[in-house]
Length: 527
Image (tube, rainbow, N blue to C red; front, side, top):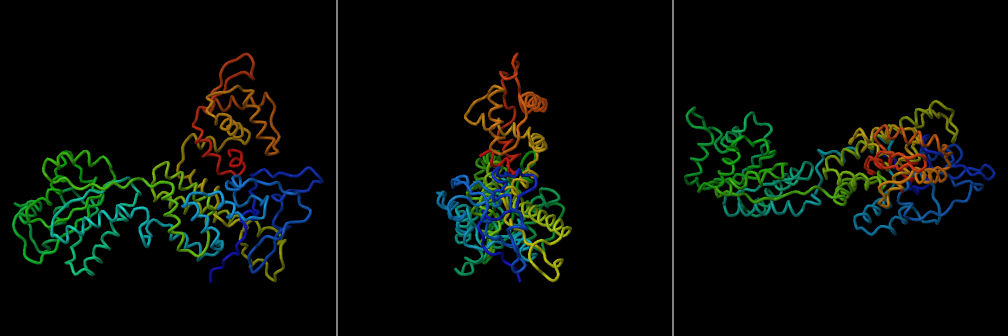
């Protein structure tokens, strides 16, 4: 049976990466809540590790605003009032989509990522081949296509429709639902069911083969002679009255872009089949190219066979969140930190709006968490068991404190999926050079195009002080800026005094943010 972890406040999750700087209180040498380790604040209960109450001698926590709490990872300590993480976020959120996301976060228990059954179930619902039970965010487009097909079937009228949109915008998925609902409607309404022929044009050995496929479905036993082509036979067939009771044929031609030849004859001839006086073809053409309609529609219009056009726009951030929510709603536990899903949706929406990529990023983020847990358990197995009492400690598989898929997991998954030389360079820099870039982003955020080295130095020292990291001297800072300039990340002007040299960012601020937001330390600095 799957083991569900008890609901805990994400702020008590503990788990700090070794790469993150750990602040220590100078007074009495007492560590802040972030410093607490598993052995001192946790215990084993029913085979799972859960947080113990914080030590009484811990340093008092400073209050943090709800806006800052929004941007924390589950490893951040709880500060301020006794409200839980979800309640604070709910107060802050105004978007209905975000409210639903946060409500679902609070309603369900946290998942157990070391449970193989749960892990497989999560990966399955996020797989692109798993069709959802209902279409969301594409209801309007799907209903328009369905209504068009119903009218053609009911009136025994031929027609053509062109569906276009970028990859991953729900065209093929919507078409599958249209076919299901059309058959269901015909069965319940006592209407003769159409004969449905689905063709993926990329599977054709040559473009004209599509006419053979159509003819083969209408007349399976028809033998072709070398004198008459399948296209000519279809044209002759649709020029005379059909036998009574002949069903309408719905032709769904996916990847229609493949049929574009130099003279576009095949594409034109295909749509022309719906214009013959006794044609019973309903043609639904699907293509990725949005401008394809502009390229071939004028000719079709002149031939009096202009199809109806339905465009599937790229998914927005909120739509991607809603689709991810719909898939995850089938599971009885919470997997993702709300901010992690929001980051995934935001980045995919700004890049392409491709839902398939969003699903892939989520699956990759889960695999990163899985790898992190495996590595953590391997490290624990090499050291003595410090927590709890058990007859056979080796048989215990520890469930991690931080078992959400967090922002840093999604950021790393995005980084792998959208690699660029600039992002890779920034990601591989030494920490102090990354702090300089982080300081430059904060400095230029108000719209400034450049600043003096002295101004940059002040921002750099502010970041170092706020994170309790010792800063470097002026000369060393100047040398590091020169290294960043040599790598094409900064531009440094000329001046007799080093502090008066003008500094400019040569890369997009978003590239710096994207490269560093997967690191908890820099995610807080960039806020």
